[in-house]
Every structure is written in structure tokens, then in C-alpha cells.
Image (cartoon, rainbow, N blue to C red; front, side):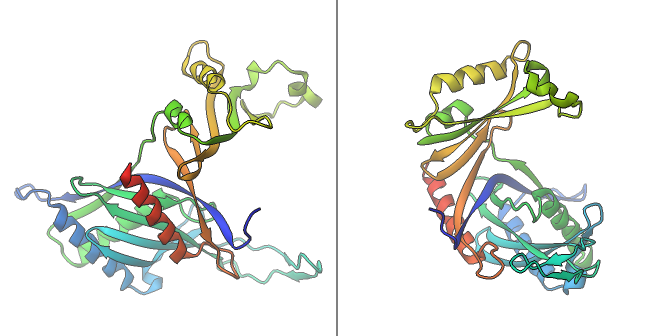
Length: 307
């Protein structure tokens, strides 16, 4: 039974690299300790700004974003909370219990705040940072967060007349081999196959003479009752077909299930793992409880490091 005070939060893993750009006559080496110190100073610089100065307007998506808070855990480890608000989204409001209409109470510039959480952890012996990103449908993409930080970094460099210029890049942390991930699963509950609509010879596809069906169709298979996992040989057969670019009919396979860390999702196209954290919800807004998110994320990171 689902706990009404909890929610499942999808998280992805990335590598974050902070580059130091120098003048041509500067021969100093890349010093990760200096990078960590500069990044800490940079975050403090951003938070010292007034909100009206700290915010960034993403015009294309009509969204305002800003760094709301951060916690410096020392030695290159940080917990960051970003906020966003979408504007120009005015609608009639209605009480869904009494069906009483309230009209349009928002102004075009008003928006609902959304939080997006980011954990940054430094791994010794590596010049990159592991980043745990909370995927929030109503929040921010990692790209928009990194773009925001890079713009702020540019201002930081100019305002403080820093000797070095810094920039941030990110890349997805690759997941393990698709079939290996399936072998390690405890259960598999949903199997999705993406195929071309041309390969489905069924009268249903011609229903009512529709021509506006997407070129690719997703077929979702539920696990039969009485078993915990789809047969591995069945998945392998589908997987082998998806890897045959000349004759294969399956474009992509996606699997949902559980492993030693909890719920997971993996697909054959993007070899990365999608995990879920079960965290507390805020009482009124039902948003993720930030303190509990960072606690659960750290538990997960610690377990990962043991592997």
C-alpha cells in the first residue's frame, strides 16, 4: 500500500567537470583543490545576490530560475536546491470538492515555485564530481541548471576580476550493460517495446482511417501473474533483435523492476540507470521534503561506493 506521506522521486547520475581556462602565458597546472575552493566561493557569491539579480529568465519556456540555497559539506561535496517558477500560465481555478469557481486569481507574472535538488560529490583520485540529479517534471532540466551556473560563473569571473575563468560541463554517467542490469534485477514488472508502426500489421492501426499516428509505437507488456521476472531468454531475444540494425524490428527495449537499491528503469538505447528514492512529502504543498531527499540520496551514494 502506498504511503500518502511519501513519494517516489526519480534520480539520474552525471559526471560534472569544472574547467579552468587560463591565459596563454599561464603554465600553472590543473589543481582540483583550488577548483573546489573556487566553486565554494562561487556558490557563496551567487547566494549573496538579491533574488531579483540572482534570477535568470528562460524566455523560450517562460520560466524563471534561481539558486535558492546550498549546503557546503566540505571537500568538494555540496547539496544544492534550485527553484523555478513558470509565468504566463493563467487559468480559471475551481474547488474540486464543491466545484465552486474562483476565477483567474493569478497575474501573468505569477508562478508556482518548484524545487529541483542536486547532490554534488567529489571522488578522490578523480577530477570530476558525481552528481545526483532529481528529475522533476515541473522543475528544471540539468541543462538549464548548468547553463544558469555557467552564466553566474561568467559574472563571478568578471566582478571579482578572477585570474582564471571557469566553466561547467556534464555528461551522463553510463549505466552497466543492459543484459547485466536485467540479470541483477530482483523483479521485472513492465517490458516496453518500441517498434515502427509499419511493422504492425493489424486492422486496429487503420481504425477510422487515422493517419496522424506517430511513426513509432510503444507496446507495453505486463508480467504474467505468478512469476517475479520476465524470462531472461525472452528479453535476450528482444534485445538481440533491437541490436540488428538491418533486419531487427524492435527500436528500443525498456524494463521496469526492482534491484538491490529499490525501483529502477533501464532501456537499451540510453545505457544509464534510472533509480527512485522514496522520500517524505511536505505537508501542504506535497513537494519533496528537501532534508529527507538529501538524507536518502546520501544513503544511496554510500551504497553505490561500496560496489
